[in-house]
Amino acid sequence: MATSVNVHGEDKVVVDMTKLVPSLPLETRCPPFPLRQYGGFWLPEGILPALEAIHTRFETRPSDVFRASFPKSGTTWLKALAFATINRDEHPPSDEHHLLCHRGPHDCVKFFEPTVAATGSLDDFAALPSPRLLSTHHVPYSLLPEHITSDDSGCRIVYVCRDPKDVLVSGWLFSRKIMDNSAAEAKGGNLDHQPPYTMDQALELFCKGRCITGPDWRHVVEYWEESERRPNNKVLFLRYEEMIREPARNVRKLAEFVGRPFSSEEETAGVVDAIVELCSFDHLRSLEVNKIGVLNLGATFGNDFFFRKGVAGDWRNHMSTEMAAMLDGVVEDELRGSGFTFDGVGDSTLTVSNVNAGN
Image (tube, rainbow, N blue to C red; front, side, top):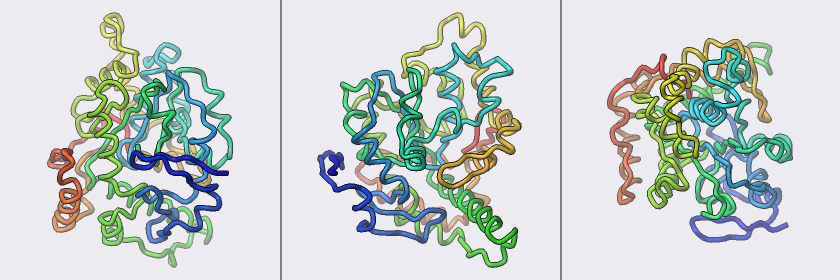
């Protein structure tokens, strides 16, 4: 079966993904998954068949909202905030029995491609009532199908970006945790022979764009360019660090964008503040489901893997100034002429334990 895929503005026909994948460039040095280069990005090998399913079998609805980000850029927090905002009538944020108190954000808003890849089915998403909140974690804008990106679709995308240095560090620590967990299970808790995965190695690969869904800067710029081309229409572009500084203002912006602005009655009743508090890092991390629950996406992840420090600027605790300068230089070179900058978002360390959720 052939598949038409839009890559950088051009429709390209590819063979069945199961036949194409083995021929794509392979990267195995960036754990925890083997990567294949497709459409200019290094994508987890396992999700590529799901990309074909999204293009050929997924049926959008005009009310669909897609949450998108480069991995480790504020994914969990944005899922929680978006879910609480869009579903606030059915699940009032002040309710102590709110769904987010009993199910992790990734269970409330499932990852699209990994779920399809793991199940081979789109049924989980077809069964959701409208408006659906969907989450793409790997697909860059240029690889989304036209039935999502076109004006006629009515679909909207909420994207969050983050300082690449914090993205690198968070991804590196996350990968090491997965590697340690897998090694412990395989060897009965013996990690003596666990192969090293150092920050130096992670930095080298990240700077070459050879990381999960990399290059980071290209992923970010594609969504940013679309937000600039069609402001307030197709893509809402958020910055993690700005959300930390003013969470309530960004929740209002999110609600307005998805067509669910807060009423004066809701403002008076403190609904916005209730959503921010419900989705705070300290609150979500304290919940039992996020301490002991697990998420199965082909591999098993502890829910606690997704809640670390909840700060911006933590890269200083793991990278030398020379490492940071190297990455900043690469990003600056790669962004030259694009019109986009990360605006010095990593200049100060921001503690967000009481205002947002983790990575």
